[in-house]
Length: 449
Picture 1 (spheres, rainbow, N blue to C red):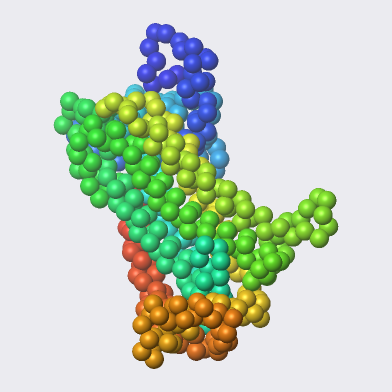
Picture 2: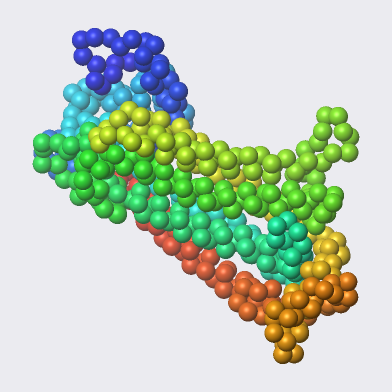
């Protein structure tokens, strides 16, 4: 297929393959975004008088047809197409002739791919936020159900103080809510329109960047044309940082489950449907999914580092190195989406072994509580600490209810404020749903221009 930049010479086939083969299939993720961005750009060209109304309608219909064909699997970017932009433009030229040749007026493939990636990111973040919020809800419900079930709390991998299933599960809900704040921040930084920045230095035409920004539903124009271009890897890095936070939370969940479902701990039972077996040991039931999760967390962390490494030290202006950020970016979005999808049923697949958990709360975990009882009688804490430390063998056994009620401060065993956390999660969900609906309306309006 003829390249958009091709003149009177042919490109070396090996050079072409080296530059594009590894990532060209990824452009199939950007077909609808490229078409929508092109509709907005065409509308702006119509407003400028470069396109007639008839020409705009022809281009819009052609671009909507591309989306429809792609949804049916009949429009595929493949080897030899160079990229999604070339594929779509050549398709329009073949279909519409001279009209198709006008579409690229006032833009570069540089700002075109930036728009595609920004729209793809927005779609992806909305989907990930939905999955994340569903998991938050799952952890809150799990915490409420088992709020009063004591379990040992650990520091330095040794029994430390009483914890509870409610505290354990609730910690993941609150961690994910923090992760969603970081995801929200990455969405806001992503929500800037680079369209019109050209190849980094603008164009010598009176284009209306504010119009295309409005049509595409971006919060604002990304003002400086040069910064719009060099922000490509930076915006990916910011999103990957948010994704890394989610994976750090989920990898802790996975590690806890792998530890707490061993026969030595036996704090939780796992539904057999979530387990794999061994080819040599008949008795084995392995919670493999959590091990894969733990490993894939490192892949996302590695992608964040890869993108930072690629963009570190690049000079101002567009550099082809930016293309190397696409693969780890797409892969990480896929990993995080699948991991969130895994964790909700995984949470439902575990059941606390209440008697085992209670038996595991051996006397030493109540040492600090016993010291605090002496403090309540007027003994200085340091003296109470020493007294209990020298008589650990005489520690009494306590009623779990007493232990829970004694920790009544905010966030303590007896005051986890799970209803408040649930309300906070609902407010967060409302914000994401509002933004998602706003963007869905923008897409609908674009299609109906």
